[in-house]
Length: 160
Image 1 (cartoon, rainbow, N blue to C red):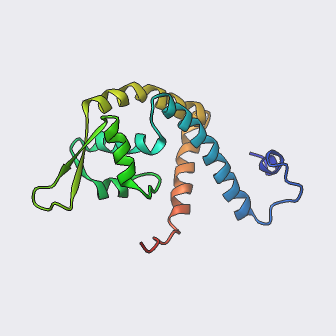
Image 2 (cartoon, rainbow, N blue to C red; image 1 turned 60 degrees about the vertical axis):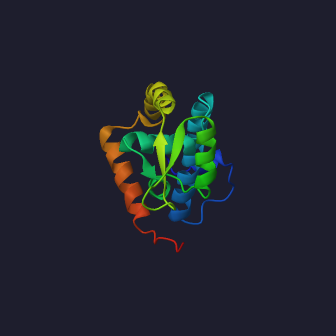
Image 3 (spheres, one colour; image 1 turned 30 degrees about the horizontal axis):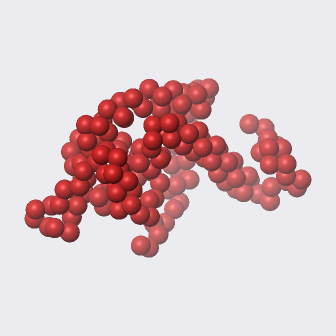
């Protein structure tokens, strides 16, 4: 990408104040565009990106999981996990189960209906991944992942 592309896209008159600012705004703009595309795909199946993410985590684990652990594995922080689970439960995509040893712990279990829905989404999700960044070489994809991980490595966990 040539250095002036984002500046032209944003119709920004002045150059960026720093390379860090330009890189960060490139990252945010790209994320926004990708999120919009995935959001439209999930909406066709009656889901939000966060709902899809939660169901994907449950399917990958293969067994009921504590609500708090699901929250820790989410790609994006969800401030109201209870509300997210409520909506999925109302769609019969998950079920809540209280832990018998500790009633404060709530396990979330994926339903057959949700597994079927995820199966229908698997191909369109993979196709969208390829459509959005499939034009990058394997080396570029590995470099991109490594650089993003390196950028996240500087983050100090926020106090909860």
